[in-house]
Length: 233
Image 1 (cartoon, rainbow, N blue to C red):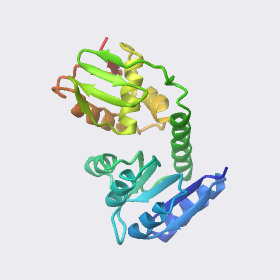
Image 2 (image 1 turned 180 degrees about the horizontal axis):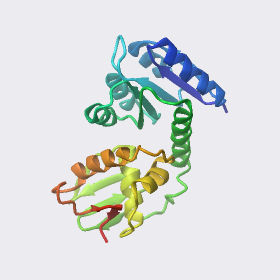
Image 3 (image 1 turned 90 degrees about the horizontal axis):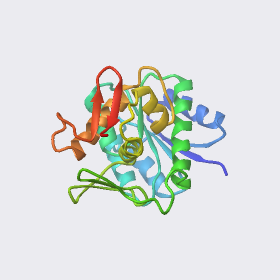
């Protein structure tokens, strides 16, 4: 079954480059140059991935992403941005983007990100790593329900993004084991590009802000200086 990728990009050159790469990967590509028109096309259905520019006419990429995330079902979103500040990246992730690429980017990197997102979708659909009978994990006030993908801290439910949950569950399944940023990229994101370890840092900071009583002194996700991170043992 051919996958369909919706590309919402107002720069003709970049839009055509992305469209060509998507078709080279054997997928169908739909290219739209306005945010509002892209959202309207998404709502018609049949979209398997959205590649979304941040700055768009009609409706900006953050608003489009927020609307996509409020829709039923799960469709991955890869955000493209000409901005490279930490704030812009975090805003995109907060709105529900699964990943981002900062312009300019290489064709090989774009292809790797697309493939990684679809591998993750397939894993979520198959639930190969979470048996239907898997029991919730409880440790020191933190409760993780892997089947329902729900997290509670001291009986208060915490809303995590799909990637944040995957990261937390990966840590919790390997309590005490230290993971480098490169290992986490490979295991949780499904790809590893040198120089993109800051993606891990951003997600861990956001995860700590949600589950830790004091993110500056984390109890669950701990830093091992000079090596990486581990879940409390």
